[in-house]
Length: 368
Image 1: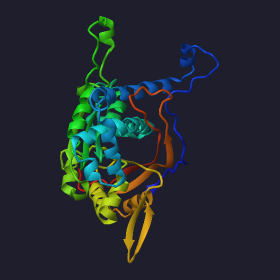
Image 2: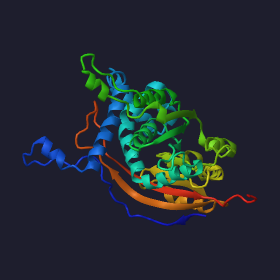
Image 3: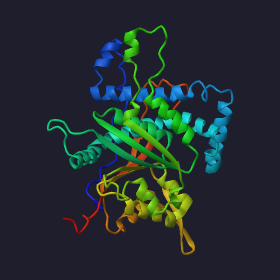
Image 4: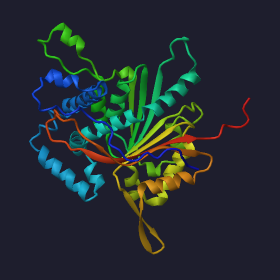
């Protein structure tokens, strides 16, 4: 059953740079007023935008028919024709170039906000592996399973891991759309240094590096309808098939409400049950979705709507042999873009709800 240990009221986390004053200060003076944390966040967000600009700037965003294609994707999304909106590579490139950058920045900030809990996972892995050197723990790898994840999730995880010393990651992305090509392009953008002018100095060349080297990040995409995935499939993805029981991070970003809508409460509940049965103890479930999301279902002859987070809690409290502890819950948070955004097209702020759970399972019996 689920147990709530903390329910923090909605608040707006610190995002982006501190607005520059209009008192006539020189740029250097204004920079000094920015806290180290805010300055690091600004650099991180700038690096994320640079990846999307490198990958899509000279192709998708510069295409003569970009605006026309964008309108076609918008219309398909408005009509809830998801098979059409995510049905071909051109549409996916346009979607990723237009909507994924702010989401990637938002998701990286969300991960930064729950870093303490993620470090608990890494520390447990280090404890299991033992220490090769008494003064230095072995490198840790964060295993991430992203349900409904593709472009934004990959960039967010890679960007977040790049801020952590001695930490690597393995990202498994599952989505029903054919995102493989987009994921491969963005992975290359993440792990490859940006091009440098042939006239650049040796010092300038040496200063250029990838956000994160490929040795620290692996990415695997699978085109899967998770509503049809059985418990055995989920167990293999989560590493709970007997090979390892290390905790993992499971993200469900702007997907859970769509699952409730597309599959109904029955199929989505079954998916969450299969996920719970397969998840290693100590794993984290991080859900981000639109605030005020409601899912409709038919009870008897009446159609009723339920809040998505209420349905999620209801399902998790009915699970046997696993206690889902709610660590954080926020009904509505604003993610605001940096004051100055260097990107070919305009981007918008976004609002979301966030819920974080930890799975606790009883220790296996019959041990030594």
